[in-house]
Image 1: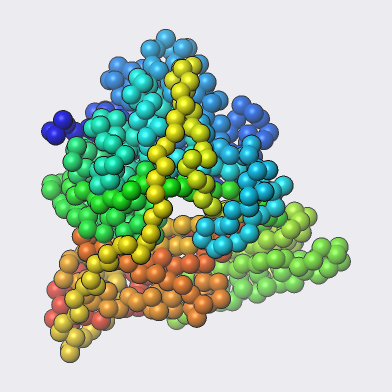
Image 2: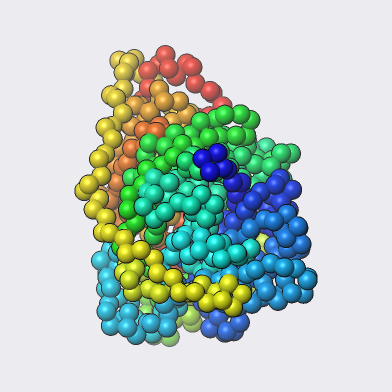
Length: 609
């Protein structure tokens, strides 16, 4: 057992991703294929589909694009498949998979996990009125609820594999559980093997977004090469929790310390308290080392006992939103675009008052190309081509319809240079908000169905986690040699990756060389980050709540910025509602370094701003 390894291919990072991963990974030879389809936005979309059709509400791509063309190869190679494709309706997804397997004459067992969907318990949950776990807000109007799902862990998946399942379908589980479940089953890890569970969860975190670990969204994007043929990640996991990340031979992309480090910091909060249902992970001391071309070794993580609650996400409707984008080009393009947008709202507001509809609850205008995303740090230049994104929220769909009509109606009265490629006029869409709270583990029965064999499953109770017990690493040493200094943009010293956590955004920053870290640490403070993102933060930079964390093992730091995404997800009307580009904004931050060090840097990494 100590020498045993398993190869796990990360074949999907979201619902609707390319279907190229499955044949690629089967050709490379893997023991498991894992698929992550779900996000909070996805759950609300699937919930609406289920409300219209009781047979819908799952990721149909899993049936049509994965199993239908590849089930025979999966069976012939003895590959196990684990997917959270069940969405809000795992049972129907399981039936669709079984029907297809029968149709193809294959002998594959399909197992389904249910218990995460709590919508049937809405009345009791509303009566208990749990508070929002991040903001403390009160329970929303239960009549507007679209979905309620607890985030399950990996032990039910491991149990299904132990029962002989070839294909495991879950509803909402944490993204990394599809990988950790395979590790628990293969290596016999127990619920008290905290470090091993944390390490397996980290492996899952690195695989869960597919090619984001192999060059996708990478700071040094040109190094990824042929992204049309990008390779999907393969994790070779050992029984001690260490693992290697690589990709199939002959594919595009790249696997480097930078790509893997960026993915490790993607969408995390406190790196020493990454809360999962099976374990609390500490990745602060994890070391990431290049061991060969497109091959990176990741050391084990540290773990703490599982928490006593499941994170539970409720989505609910809160009115409507709508908007569109148009372009302007020629002289004064940005000013023309701004005037157009301002007058669209003047027209729309006049009509709203005439219909007694009330004002828009929120409006958004972003002039993309004029560096509006950079706030006060924008370069002082006049672009001659911009895209104007204009959007609003309102409690009534009719009001959004008026805005969208006037966006078109102003077309002949506009400043010159208006253009755009579009089909039909945009339509109002629901605003879906996220409400996260905690559900005691003892209150949640889980059921496993392996081709009709029903098994009840109960997770361990867990214990309450106290963040005060965390021993924080000391900050990097004070920078030296700053008597003769120059300023360079962060991109010349670091990689960065950002993402969303509800209405929070995280930005992970990894030093390209450990020697750069003291200078990065000194320059990037909570205050300086708040100033750079103040134009996004509710209440501005002075109201900002920015947390800063150290990850000495990977020579990195992580920032968590609160109330910065305009509600986040489908509740936001911003161009970047999930903070995916925030790392790129931070990479322009000036860093003071010794002049002698600046002379040694790679001049191809950014320019001073």
